[in-house]
Length: 355
Image 1: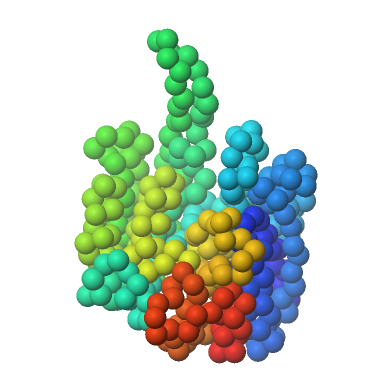
Image 2: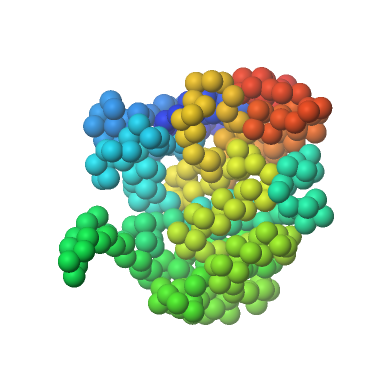
């Protein structure tokens, strides 16, 4: 048995956190004999500086040839004035398109050790276990756009949102299938009282729901969903939504969980899938050795689960992270008086020791 993993560190803290995740993968490989091999490729601002493009063709080809992709983070104010078509963020958008990564799964499961870190009361947070299913390659991020034009004597810009029935059908089916494996409830999020795309979204999801009689469907407007995530997050099982709403609400849900630095994600494709933490490249702390790598380490666990179907190895990583937290270790973003402060390298070592 052997698996090929393409590692794309990206920008900012990307190298530090992917190095940590690979170290943990090597440890789990020793234990379970997985036969993992790694290819490193550039993307984002780093690739732009080297090659004049945020997403070199050989990076795309390496990803297509691999069993899974581990991604760090891209972006930084260093590239704020680059041509919009060449900005670092175009790398992740391009990978989604080229690899057909149509869905993003973002689990938010609050570890008992992190309940106190949530800005919400412990009784609201304890037991939170939800998955956000976000559509990734449609909607306003991929629609037609205009950076600048004159209209009625004033400069304006615009972005076009559109969704087709097959796009909505595909993401909704993934949400229903995910719910069947969990608690059997899907919440579909839209803005159907205002947006035409949302009305099509709601009709399409409702029609598909007829094929899943054992799954409960309810609809929420996006503003109400944002409020409910803060008021009663335990009500949710699987939440499905379009690209823009998913981008925003998944970050809110991560804060409910205690720290954005803890949250993993899986971008599911028809062949290769990509795994990354949901936080950004944090250029302000890059190179200081204090970044929290646990979101990336948990993303590596998702890679083992969803791409390699190595469930025991995935569980071993997740259990080691939980044990490190339960034993009182905290990275600087989570540290409080009474806990053991651990930098990036130290928390990685602590987790490896518990595998």
